[in-house]
Figure (cartoon, helix red, strand yellow):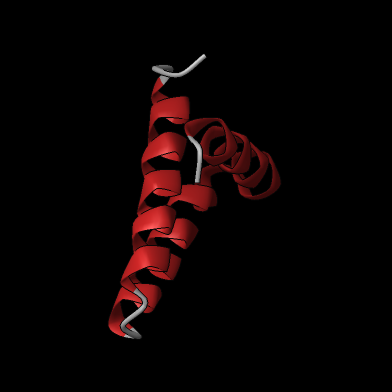
Length: 60
């Protein structure tokens, strides 16, 4: 997934779920990893990091 799409998805999730977005995405990434879906888990982890950066003010 392109970086722009990751940031767009992160913003949408942050807007929809607020402070819970990062934790919810982390749980989804963990579930994907546990299910053996490594590629999907990595994508969700990228979204989680983008949410974290958005909340920290590091992404514009």
